[in-house]
Amino acid sequence: MYKEFSPSSENDAPDAAVTKNSLVTVSEKALMVAETQTAKETSTKQKEEDPSPQIPVTSQDAKVIVYYFHGMVRCATCKKIEKYSREAVEHYFPNELKNGKLVFRTMNVEEAANHHYIQDYQLFSKSLVVSLEKQGKEVTWKNLTDVWKLVGDKDKFFQYVKDEVEKFLKQAS
Image (cartoon, rainbow, N blue to C red):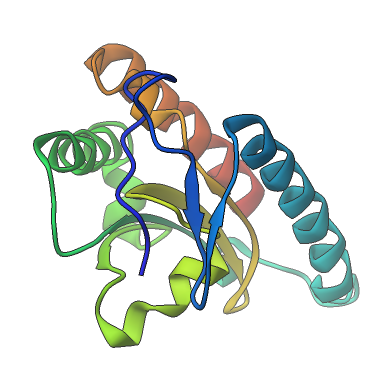
């Protein structure tokens, strides 16, 4: 599956990422480079998969999904990240949740049906991912990795989640 990772400090955080079939050890800097490359690949993929400009995309055709991914074993910090994530989304976006423009989902990636998310989103730990779907297809996504750094400051955590979700909601309009 994926390796437990809680970057409370650089010195005691294991530098590991796990893919579906293999374990790859990387430094934090290498991980950032990989995330940048993934963003470039996603951007290229998006351009190829974007709907034809002749087909108007209405707000009814687009929605934002906020996923909280976890495994079977859940520490207090992991539970807190899920709690804060859900609270932030519910606090700032009640109308969007009500009308279906925004969805919050908690997913256990260790369940067989959810294993693909590990590779789909290059998950290496418990993660909060924001995804934009247009006409039923995912067009872009972002792993909000700073939740680990901000979990000790609820206000900054909420602001981070709010800002990132807002960016995706603007794209969905």
